[in-house]
Length: 183
Image (cartoon, rainbow, N blue to C red):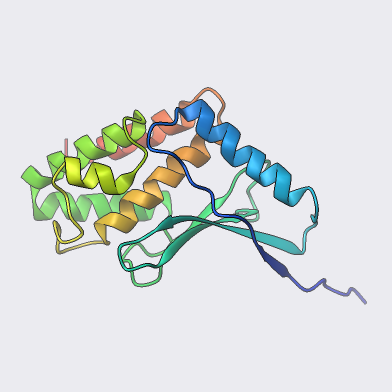
């Protein structure tokens, strides 16, 4: 008879990314946070959650480690807020959401793509600042997921890709896939 260990959930410290940090600085900060916290208690029965973003309604976006059955090393999963309109927050869910936004308003979609480019380039890591700069609000699109949630999930997916692929090829591949929508 096999006895399954009960899952233990640990909430780690909030990971705050400064507005002007480089990709390299972000990767070091996030990975060092994982090492500092997960080296103490580890095992298959432990799940770590790290708060990473606060939404305008004060809900918190968290990342989860390990990210899933097929995740390895320092990989993580961005936990999507319920009722955000992004389903599970998978790559496919994000691509579908962008298609919906493009079909609703192609002109405003161009501003959203410019904002995503600034995210990719780490022009400013603060999504709230970027939304103001590009004149995008949560109400800019009436269809699809909440814009703020979408952008903050993509930000952390970019970070996850940077960690998994040291050459930034993962970030660039995700970026190119996002940019290809609406062309």
